[in-house]
Image (cartoon, one colour):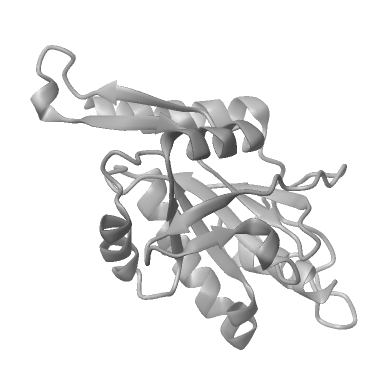
Length: 210
């Protein structure tokens, strides 16, 4: 097992340690209006407000979280060279977007880099285009990003592939959860990167119906 694989497994273990809620095999039963009756991810019952921030998207345009009020938003922190968790999350998001159909046009999918040194806006744009949807890739200065990481409890640490030969590159050991923010800007649900797209889509349907 190489170092990158050990890092990903470590992220898995870290998530399991804090608990990600119960994810059963089938979709939650809908209510009379066809809306799932319960959240599938880890519900944040206190519904804390999501900290506002302004970063730069892959097109060089400012992205202000407060401007996105009025519809749900998915927030994930990762990096382009991530070996497993990040591409798995983005692939899952593509499926979520497909499951939601036209309703998905109201949902914002935001990917915040934890590797600003390599993840330039141009690099983020090329990477996200591979998933075939209009996801937003966000970056900023070190100070801007660190403030966002701190506000959302995102752990990130550079790990050299070979400490004795830094030319071989590095990976980032990081938190691997998707945060669902409701139309009022409140943190409502968390999913880890192994969550089924069907479960994330079901939770977004609940938020869209509020």
